[in-house]
Every structure is written in C-alpha cells, then in structure tokens.
Image: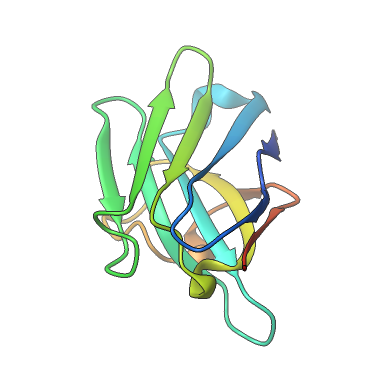
Length: 125
C-alpha cells in the first residue's frame, strides 16, 4: 500500500505560478510512474502529467504542455508540478497518483492504484 500526500495548492491570479508537491510513503518500491490528474466541478478526472521515476521520462497533456513542468526525486519518492502561466480553466482539484509498470499509456486513471486526497488549485482574479 502506498500513501500519498499532496501539498501546495491555493489561489493564484491568471498568469501566475504555483507549485504542487506529492510525497509517497509505504510500499514505494512498487512505484514506477507518478502522475497528476485534475478534476473540475462537473467534469471527468483528466490526466495532467506523469513522470517515470527511473529515467525521468515525462509526459504532458496537450492542455498544459509548455506551461507545466513535472519533476521527481526517486530517492525521496516525491514529485512536483510547477505550473506557470495559469489560466482560469486550470482550476480544479489536483490529485497525485502512482502505478507500477502497467501499460505504455500513462494517462488512464484506472491504471493507477494509489491516490492522494487532492489539493485545490484556483485560478481567479
């Protein structure tokens, strides 16, 4: 079992920046990918970004590529998501998730077996 704790959400104005972080504990030896998903009110949970911890391969959704940067520390089992040029449509609860090897597709929520409680990110003037 892996436990995940997110931190760093908050309120920011459009165009601003925010960093969210996720720390994993427990059976962390099983973790291959750490990812961020988000869910806005009334919408489906959507993939934001992922990182393969060994090798630092990174993945982004089209909606955040070029604005968000994911980074990870394999030794500390942490992942960070630096969010720049934030837009109101980025407003959502951001969830950290982990999985093992699994399929090559990294953006499918059902492939992830551990989830954090989420942290609210609000982009508003």
